[in-house]
Image 1 (tube, rainbow, N blue to C red):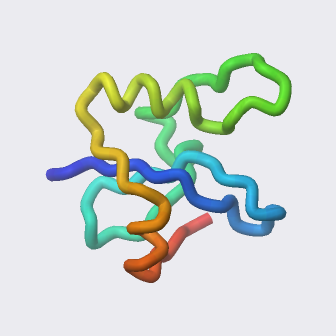
Image 2 (image 1 turned 135 degrees about the vertical axis):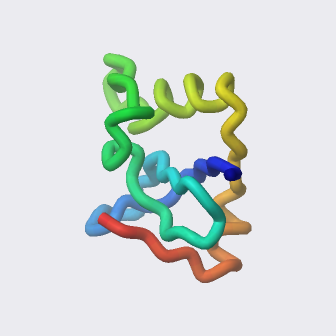
Image 3 (image 1 turned 90 degrees about the horizontal axis):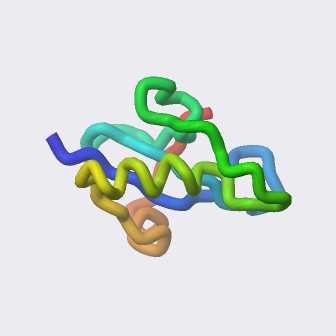
Length: 80
């Protein structure tokens, strides 16, 4: 199973990107907060990227980062 992560716009936002995850390439992208088993608390940095701490953790665990452009070209689907 290939676990993937991507920076995508948060639904209902002004286009601000947050970390999204999915467990397999056929699944829709979901915000990292939908995965409490993987998410870690965000860094306490004003205006910091939402999901950056989780990204750092999962990258060390071998998750694959999918470029936002690639997810967009695939007609990405997100789930709130």
